[in-house]
Amino acid sequence: MKGGIETESGCLVYSYHVKDPAKSGQNEVFVDAGNGAILKQEHESALRAAAEKPIDKTKELAGKAKEKITGEPSTNQAVKK
Image 1 (spheres, rainbow, N blue to C red):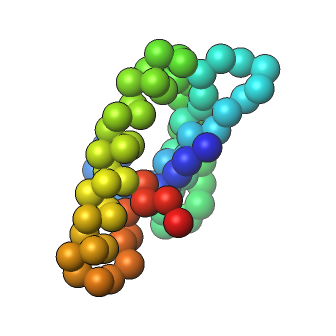
Image 2: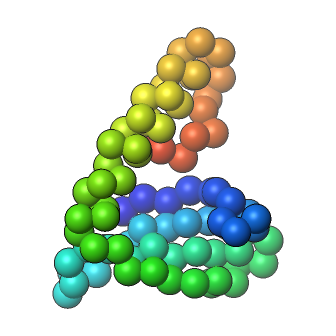
């Protein structure tokens, strides 16, 4: 569904949100950015996933604004290409 690079507990990780059609909500999978190892998985309820949508939209808008101001492509993972 979405993913990007972030820090989690002081470590640089890729975080992916994956939808399982058999369950409500989604799973968040944390992958070590250095060696590709899966560090942990967490199930997020549909309510928590919905609560994150405004945050994701804010990140997307911030990335687009930065692109417009700087003329450079955004590294913000929330910006939809």
